[in-house]
Image (cartoon, rainbow, N blue to C red; front, side, top):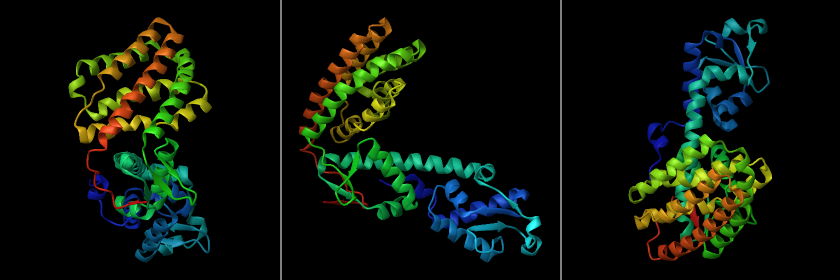
Length: 335
């Protein structure tokens, strides 16, 4: 599938940064004479040093910037001669620069979120079909970003257990086997009830009502649920509610088993079905116990729900083996 950001801008990253800096200078006279560092711009634009340095070199050639002696800093200007004197210059740190690039910051955040989501989908779709290596440079080229952004995204996916590194530090995807899934579900069946028991102490009635109502709506429309709605139902219980636990070590361990949460989307695509009515009913039983203040019963119900989900997921994984593998992204290589 094509990535949205790549369609909207095919210009090299350093040229985009050049355009954004010159545009900011035109609309903000206070940037005239500002001294900025490479490190500050790297953090603001969420990229590596190379595209920032290339953009500053373009600014220097265009007469909009001058390198400050031998330091990794540049003075921005419209008239080079006006700022030869150090007294006319103003050093701006990262926090002082951010307001001038607020739109750029918002764009970077949105882009990172889109890349993260798209890579998660692509990786999830390939999980049942073998083992793959991830090529960082090819992924950077495919999404038109620096390898720094790709590395950050891959690190986030690794924290959730979707990918891992082999003995040679190569990022690897899969294989998703019945044993691996059962192991993850077994871990979740022990850890999540403990987190729920702690989180229940910090759960507001209004929050419980909100997620319960969302579950009832899903139950009434179980045959027409979208992937997004299913994911929301799963996240309500297994992520948002459990994150109310104050035991950060426990919630971190649970977050590393989230591979089990993304498999539902894997199954719904080729099978064109979303058989999650049983899971929704089990969610509602847990919420009902929480509403009554029966925390121990809610914990037992959650453990039962996870073990039942393990059986359902294992059956779906076997059924998935008869479907053809999806197209492999060019940044994945079969091992």
